[in-house]
Image (cartoon, rainbow, N blue to C red; front, side, top):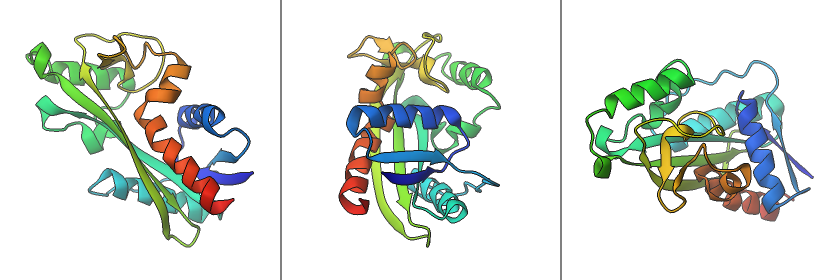
Length: 196
């Protein structure tokens, strides 16, 4: 079993990634939350730079390889915002949703396109970058939140092929189709092939 530190303080993210792992490669990789004073300064100019900053700090603290992702919602009508600042767009989930809907208020239906992107970076304890993978999913921003699952912007992100928002998806669907799942699959494959 390969142990990898997960560069996040978000237990939801650990839960989601471990659930996805069961679907792809059970009993091969174990992700653990970073212990101790983990407070990286995300001042990168890209999703990849931010994911590297978090993974490098986690790896240094834990002394084992670490994986971190930087994820964002990029809305076309808002020139890609909130993008890199998705997590810091507003103080909590409700205010993020309210702010986004406010900014999108006068945008017509066919111009409400957006995508979620997730960039994952794996870093060794010496700070060297081992591997990067990117996952993306396209959708539209709804006019009101829908769904009980997920977190962040999931209740506003509608996937036309499935006719539901990310928050309406079951955990199984999300673990197969989400931007995080699409980044994690090739990453886990690389970890097993190169670190086992």
